[in-house]
Image (cartoon, rainbow, N blue to C red; front, side, top):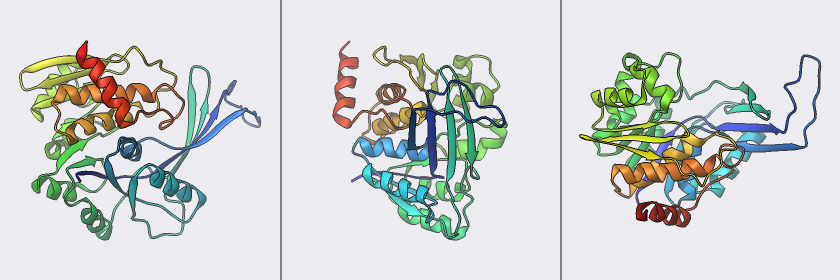
Length: 303
């Protein structure tokens, strides 16, 4: 059975909803709505893939704390097989308290952001990643493993996330290894230095024959060789919270790659999974299963 693999830090979100305002210094404000969830990033993409019935594996860091126990439980519930790279005694996750207002939000995060792997961790990741059909890349320290996996035929998919120093120069090595890159509008403009999504998409042809640029709520640009096209977002989905939309899009997109769909179909799968994700608060609250995904995709194709 083909599988998808990735390495990245585990994120936990403590969501304080229905907040009237951000409390000032010395203030305490109560809310009647709270949830504890796995957060966004590479783990969220793998969990969304697991919910689609895809075999998934993640190399991450988990401790003996209650948040790590919660993450282990959620990985198991969603069919994601974790490999623990952590050997310390602390809390190795990123833990975010999110204060969600009516039209805005504020965050406080504990953690170091990403994994800084030693040689043993790299070897362990390669052990579980060998033979994967698709590997999700991040900006961590696994570039040598990515290169080896690519040489063995694994499809490499890069999602960098936002970086104030995002540029071709800084990310050249990762972009050269990647077969696909899935930036959003802001990331595409930043890394290319262009002023429009279309210009940014064509600038990415420097690295990719098949280009993907998410245009936020509007949809997604695709370029396949000389064929330029646009896949609009789905009207059926009302945006409640955009947290995790990009991670969910990537899951649908990778689902299409895993089963050898054409690029446009992969993007449409991504628009479905990403669109459904924004209909509830939290990175992983709303999702489609495989049956729903294929039914909605059929409706789109028949229009």
